[in-house]
Figure: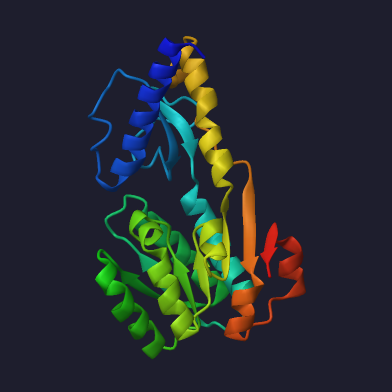
Length: 251
């Protein structure tokens, strides 16, 4: 890649980062530019959030890879209950400031009804609220915890895991590295792959393609990761059928 093309690619990357980071605030990023191409890498619902007209034909200056968080929410809850079948009440940590937060919570609620599980949701905006929220969940006899993906939880995941370890609360965490840090289970996109794929969009745009004509893609690689060391510490026996489906088992 020549110097000029590299600079252009970096500029596109900065706009993509801005779009992802600004997704907490409705309408903030689309107003930044209506002409400069923007490639996003981790937007949950680009159509629902108003970033593109349709997935097949974005129709504007934005395109990229959608996370499919809403579609994943039900699957993640199902896997958590499969790992912890005794959990009849599940605490949910979520951030209402996220545009994707409320739609994802609704998907979790629908899944909970089909699984005959009661949810104990807690709206969190500040890390100081983690400990009181988990304490209330324990008082309400939560048998497991579901962490909805969001920047506040990514930034403070170690604090959350310290609290859940002390409370002996099995936790579905958003990412693979969260499981490596002590979470029980995660299911989601392969993140290295997610961040590599936008490069193909950038290359096409630099060669003259229009974002409006480049369909939004979904993740193609998903990972189920289970931490057996955490399970043993919690006194859990993970079903062999679930272990057999895992992409990685940490022992």
